[in-house]
Image (cartoon, rainbow, N blue to C red; front, side, top):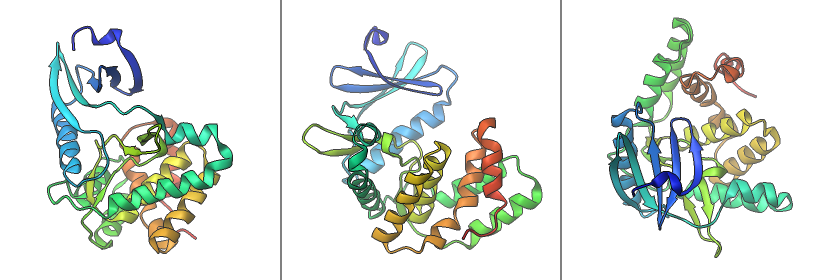
Length: 252
């Protein structure tokens, strides 16, 4: 993978760039990116791949000069986010697919993935909230039912690729854990809201709750917790919005 920078860039994220190289998608991390987090992401990918979900196969983890890289099979197609933007008249159809794929994820188990509750307890502690708010959130989290379902952790339409023949692939498993499916749904809802897509967020919530036969109030109980975890990213533009969610005891 010499001269990788001369290849097509197919995605950029904070602290990483994704290239298309031959039949691979190569994610190259900045030099100061945590080696432990990179190796954990690759391990998550391998563990989720073993569940049988339709995801790009992990090919290798390597060092390119001073930077670490993760290579997976390249999937040719458009993201579900692109399709939603290009075909607004098909939004309901795409939302149906989006939720169906998420429920397929939640049907799987992977006992060696990090426990979602453990990750959330750590995020709450690192959130910068005052001690009273942290105590309330830790207590809320501790009272939530304990499940062991595979959770994506960053499930949004940009992480679904649809090939030309209509086959969906789910990508980007850096935040995968095992836990309560409604926590994963609450995070997806939050991501739509942070993008300002409020109508789509409500459409998603309705579709998820209907297809999973889950009470909306149950998913909403996770919102203060996932909002607190998002605070750790340190985006000041999001902070006021997220804190308003953290301090709401119950949603209507």
